[in-house]
Structure formats: structure tokens, C-alpha cells
Image (cartoon, rainbow, N blue to C red; front, top):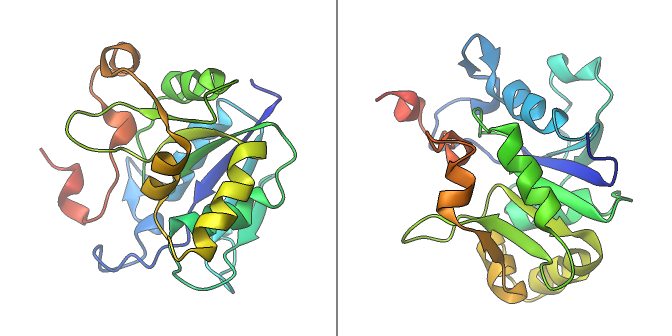
Length: 196
């Protein structure tokens, strides 16, 4: 368990492509959001769930020891959700994931968090032919002001943060040795994304 890491679960999207509340969608008999939280809770006991404004914590979370942060504006993008969650983080490192990533491997998440350090303020996973923003680990001190500055410039995506701060990517062979199926980067945008 990493005491100097806070996990942030971004869960403030509108699920428009999914057609229903995807975070309540059951995967392996559990709500998808619960699975994302369980993965990060295997790495750190500090967990913040970022929700859209006015959205109550799902019933399954009410009995747990989680902090809740609300985006300042509804559906303003993941960068805004990250900035809102970071405002209450008091650890040097934050592990950032999405609530629609139900099959993350804790060993990969731990590797991300442990890779943050001098000259490595944002760490993500290498995926051929694309920038993979989540999951990622960040230096709170470096990313908090950078996220605010990007939002002021009209940016809304996490990719802009990775580019701005020059993300360090854990090579695919390294993280895939911990997760041979590559399930850590699976995110569900449509119910059929789990098939195959």
C-alpha cells in the first residue's frame, strides 16, 4: 500500500455513447465504477471520486471511506475533473484512472505511481500508435498549476496535459509483463466493448 499516493477516479462524464449510466453497468456481477475503485484501492487507501456537479455518490460508495469531488461545471471534460479532484489532494503523487476502466491490474497502477519523480511529473503507459492518457500517475505539485493553466487556455483533454508536461511512458513490454492481456487500458464506451 502506497501511503504517499492518492488515487483519483474520474467519473463525471455523461455516458452518451453508452446509452445509459455506464458506471452502474455490471461487469462480472459488480458495477463498473466499483471495479475501478477496487483496483486503485489495492494500491492506496486514499481515493477521490470526481463526479459531475450535483451528482450524489452511488449507493455502493456511500458506506466506503472515499472522498468525493465535484466538477465545477457539468461535462466540462476530464481535465476539469482532474483539476477539481487535485484541489483536495495532500499527497505528492496522484494516480489517475477512469471509472469506466473495470479491468485494471493493480501491479501496473503501482508501477505508474512509483515511476513519478524528478523529471517525470506525468507518467503514462506506452501504447503503439496513440497517446494513452489513462491510467496515469502525476506529481501533484507540477500538475495542479499546469492543469489550471491549460483550462484557462480552453483545453479540456488529458492529452494536452501529457503533451504540455512531456509525459514519460512506461514501455509497452514492461507494463505488459505485469498485464499480458493489456486489460489495464480497456475502457468501456459501449456495452459491446467487453465482447471478443
